[in-house]
Length: 331
Image 1 (spheres, one colour):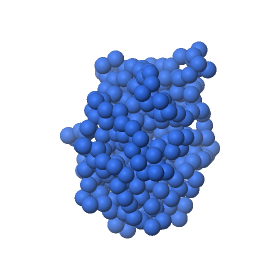
Image 2 (image 1 turned 30 degrees about the horizontal axis):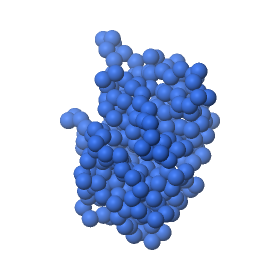
Image 3 (image 1 turned 120 degrees about the vertical axis):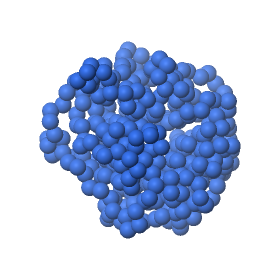
């Protein structure tokens, strides 16, 4: 139940910012503050590639395809990597830290966000810039499904159509005056979820087909013995691609919990990790869950500086049978 820890001959000595599984294989992409992008073959338990950059911390990463990856760097650069050859080239650059990068398969666009208050778009086929949303507040956290782009701005989520960036912008505010830490969309669910800085998760539905469904919010932790809520930031959320409505949350105190948001139940609470859970990722079939634990996130003064670790859990039926019975979600 504790999962297996990935082994590296040369340990990663700075915080891991993001992990992502490949679209088809069980290769795991890893970006780190140590300026290197890594590709780890989980099936063979071996490091396939380590691609260092020139001194900039890597703050995010994603796959464009099975053999091509992208990173967002602290010097503002958006880099594109050929994972077969191990080389990279710059797609473009923000005027400040580049904090997020995503790839839209539907539009063949590379999408990035940064501290320069911009969301930038590139055509992956021609490597040319195709648009920019500017004058947005700091704290961008974009994600997308189908042709929609969700951008978290402080306590609200703004929704754009990737085909008509100058069109009407929809906005939702799941939490009043509470900043959003992460936003993740899911096409099967027909909506998105956000995690807040005070330990809550909110589900919002999109589209006319879901107009009769009610979204809701819940806290990831019950009240303590003194009747106070556990106010810890939800650092990341990942959907299980094989189970509609099943997701996992990770917070700044080492908790990783699996939820069924359709049936409003907590399914599994993984053993608590010794430090922050910085990133979470399911593989393409939902059988594997990668958890970045004991990784310094540079958010809290009381975080313990330990070498980051990545644990991989096998999510089969026996796994769920080995844990206590599920409980209802508390609002």
